[in-house]
Image 1: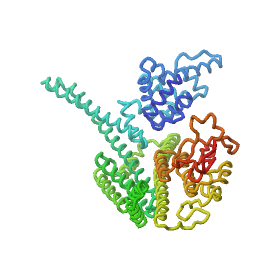
Image 2 (image 1 turned 60 degrees about the horizontal axis):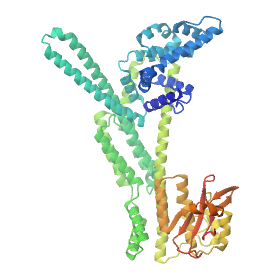
Image 3 (image 1 turned 30 degrees about the horizontal axis):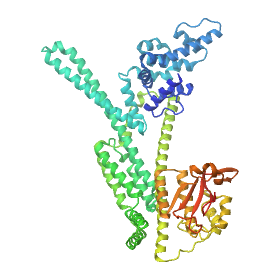
Image 4 (image 1 turned 90 degrees about the vertical axis):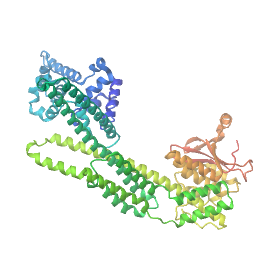
Length: 615
């Protein structure tokens, strides 16, 4: 039964976006509580729920799992228990059981039984339960739901229309739009077949009086199908527009929110106001046809790429740097100088990217003229509500609370989706910005070396442009590491002792290796991603270093203890090391930096440097 319940929960979650994750079928009470909550929100949920059971488990097994028999069984068992406790004979019918439950104060179980039986067991069951439905307490809670379900000609299509109108945006709503497309196609096919039968019948019957009754039913079927098609298409178009509004909002607002990490940070407030004006209800159309949406989406993506992606001069600087690293010729050096000068001189504004906003505004304005705006529809709905207010009973307190709760849940889901989108955009922009900053630092150092200039003096802290000053001596290394990479890189006691006999001549390279571990490598271990891994490999190539296992499989048995260090009361294995390409173990030219990643502390721990470890 647990497996079936989990299977049923997964199937419902595919259909209904607001199915709670906690109701995964592992807890019976949580599952049936979720069924009850969705049945309160969606008019035809119970009918769809029963159909889903039969679809999943078949007519034989599925019938045993239907909701109505289950509720009836629970009500009967509880009534029998109450009757036995009172010394009375158990009730013989469900009506007797409901009487016993009501007298015992089990009103919740009575309401649930009446509701489920009235909605699922047909007209006869509703007639049998009519006296219960007339009770004020029950009428107030479920009367409206029972009435709506009883007049529905097609529960599946009615459920789809209701959810298209009221479902919040997201992947689930996009799935409903696709399903509505299929339903519209099926309705058109049915209408074409009905119209074909009508024409054939007219051709076969010359006397209209004899064919009038049959033709009238055919015309009624056509009229009903046509009404269903109009309702379905209208709900689908509005739902599709909401999906596309959400996608446009995510692209534009996400771009503006991430601008603070780009070269256009000073223009963020101005563009935020323009985007807010574009996404106002008065500027958003009620329909968004495919061709116009494709054009508008491309413009929005162009705006995003123009703001967040590197400019041509930045890409040219990267390319020139790569060429020079591969071939340090005079021509490549001159090209690198030219690219760096162009990068320093760039102060281009965001007009080319922001021009896409004008084109998006023109596209939206044309669609609003054709299909009206979201604000127009809301205004019309409010006017209609005011006009009909005298004919509509005021909502009871419980209904109002349910509606408010649903609205709060919807707002919370939208906020979560928005936060996730912004985090993604911000992370992309931050990663891009960090990469550019590192590239600029390396290029400035390379250009200074080519020009024969001396590096600018720096104090003990990070320089004004956020760059880490080069390491100058092994005596400074422990303090330098602690100052610039606190919580990211730590030197074990064994590494600090090894520094006393350090003979490797390129002290600056040792500092660059530690900086690489404290920046890109640390981000790989804490954030992950292929882009960071590619950056790490590129930076290793620029430093002419390799990242290799610290201990080969063949040496693990006899030398494992040599690669073990004590760190904060724990034993760690130096399983990685950075090394240069020197074909000698001469400590003046051979570089080795043995390290490991401490998962518990979230930092790199260096166990030995800068020479080859004796094993």
